[in-house]
Length: 401
Image (cartoon, rainbow, N blue to C red; front, side, top):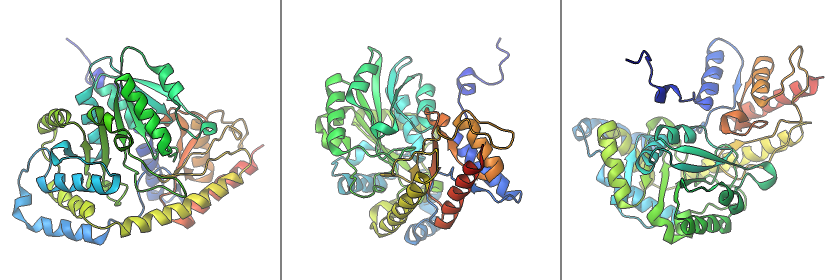
C-alpha cells in the first residue's frame, strides 16, 4: 500500500510562476508595501458594460440557474463559429466548437484528448508556463525548441525538424506570444503549417491574443493559411484577453468533429457545463462590436512603445519591441553578476528576488518560461505605474557595483 498522500502525477505539477508572482505582489501591497507588479497576465480594464449588463440580465433568467449542455450553450457555439469566421476568416460549424472553463481548460482538454503516454509535443521556448504542465498531465512529453531575441523569438523549420522523433505527435504554436510578444509573419505561419502537414503532425494553436497586434504586424490563423491542416488542428481561444474577461472563465476549442466530441465527453465527466451566466456574458462579447477592443489595443500599443524605449535605455538590458500581446521580454544577462548591497544575483530568478526586495517591483523571471536570463514584464497596468516600475529597476541597476 502506498503511503503517498499526494499522487506522483499531481505532485509533479509546478506552481504557476506567473500567478505566484502576481499573488506575492498583491500580498505585499495588502501589507502596506508600495509594490508595482508586472506579473499579471490580464488586462487592467473593466469588462465592457454591455457584457456586464448581459450577465446581470442572465442572472434573472431562471433557465440559467440549471444545467445546460456540457459542450456549451448552442447559441454561444454558433456565435463562436461566426466570430471565428469574422475575425480569422476560418469557416467552422458550431459542432466543431467546445465551450470550456477558460483557455487553460481548453488546453487541458486538447492535450488529454490527443495524447497517449509518451507522445512528444514540440514546444517553442520561451513558452507560457501552463503548456508543459498540461502536456505532462496528459501523459505527454514536452520537447522544448529554444528561440532567442536574435531570431525574434520565432522557431525555424530547421529547428522543428531537428526536434522531431518517431514519437512526435503535435506542435504547439502561439502567435502573438506569451511571454515574448513575438508575432510570426503570415509566410512563416504558412511554411510551418505546411511542414506540419508533410510531417503528419497535429498543431495546437493558441490564438488568445489575436486582436492584440501592433504596428505593421498582422495576426494570421494557421488553418486559414494552410487549409489542408484543418483536420489535424485544434484552435484554442477565449474571451479573457480580448474583452478583459479573465475572471469570467470562458474559453473554447475549435477542431475536427471527432476531437471535439471526445473532448466534450471528457468535459461532461470533469466539469459539466461552463457557468451559464458567464456563457451569456461571452455571447454578448463575441456577438458585439470591437470598439472596446480597439480602445484597449490602442492603449496597449502606446504602453508597448513606452516600455520598449525605457528598457532600451537601461545599461545591461536588451529588449525586443513588443509586436503583440501585452508583454515585454527583456534580456537581463548584462545585469547579472552585479552586486546589489551584499547580494550578487547570477540568474534571472535571483535577480527577480533582488528587484522585488530592493526596488519593490515584481516581474516573472525567464526560468518560468524555459528561458533563463530573461524576464517577463506585463504592461497591462496603468501607464504611470508602468513607467514608475521600470524607472525603479533602472535606478536599482545603476546603483549596482
